[in-house]
Amino acid sequence: MKKFLLLLVSLILLLGCSSKQDLKKIGIVSLVEHTSLNIIKDSIMDELKNLGYVNGENCIIKFKNAQGDMSSLPTIMQNMKNDRVDVLIAITTPVAQSAISLTDNIPVVFSAVSDPVGAGILSDINDTSKNITGTSDPIKVDQIIDFALKTHNDTTKIGYIYNAGESNSITSLNKLENYSKNKSILIEKISITSSAEIQSAVSALSDKVDIIFVSNDNTIAEAMPILVNEALKYKIPVYTGADSMVMDGGFASVGIDYVDVGVETARMADKILNGVNTKDIKIELFDTKLNTYINKKTAEKLGFSIDDFKDIENLVIVGE
Image (cartoon, rainbow, N blue to C red; front, side, top):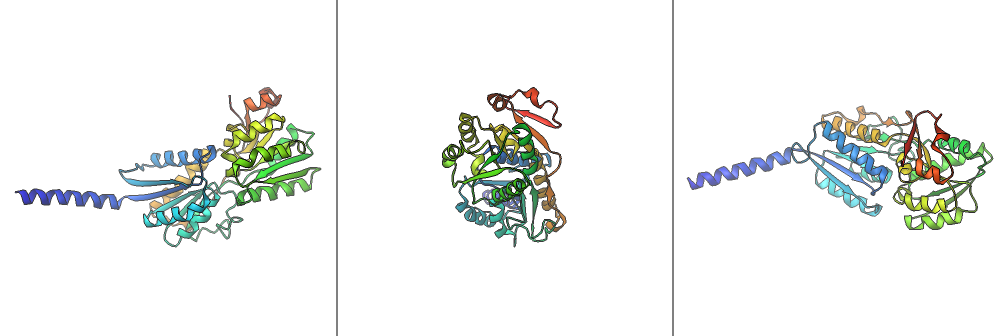
């Protein structure tokens, strides 16, 4: 009887371990903690839940944040490979660039990559045959600066702060410089390597520019309150490349809702887990359904009333 009970317990444990091993594994990697990426990550998790994925019950979700340390990404990717995840969701351009190393064995879905071709992630925006697909959020630089010039119509110089190590920021800089060629506008650019340099960058621009524009740069995004507080000392408005950066104090932006990006990313991962090949999942470009985002508190500090913007279509007020 005792031997039978031991055998029964062993069998139950074996079946339990086997069922755990059979669960689908979803890897999610993000670069750093800030509002934009948190919105995307939370949206992905919510949509996975809506699609029926319950961590620990019918799937295993492994989330890792690189905490802004790009040098840690190869190790994180190797760990995901060792864990044999069935799909890897890569949030941000640097993470997606590192995730390419997995595509021989693991399908990758990237999220919020502004320029996947320019970043070397894809050879063509329509080619998803190399076991990688995802969502792209091209920053609407022209529309943002058009709005900025209407709102601050005496602007002749624009400050641009960015991390040159982020290819998405280089893409936006190129767009900004191309835009300025057809306008009587000068671009004053300052490259930084960490958020600790933001205050000095704003100070250096304070007597040179009329407005500041920052793209969806992760180094900038994680320190938006610092940037905004410093810029407001000089009454300089900060226009941004993402709605979340307006939520964090930026004055205004024209762009998409990043919740939608997360939802579509999760749906792509779901398709892969259900047997669809990445080559049959085309890149989802989020370049329509644009909103104009205004931060109410920042606008008032700059001397505006929200009534000044009431005639704008698809207006979203934040910071109330």
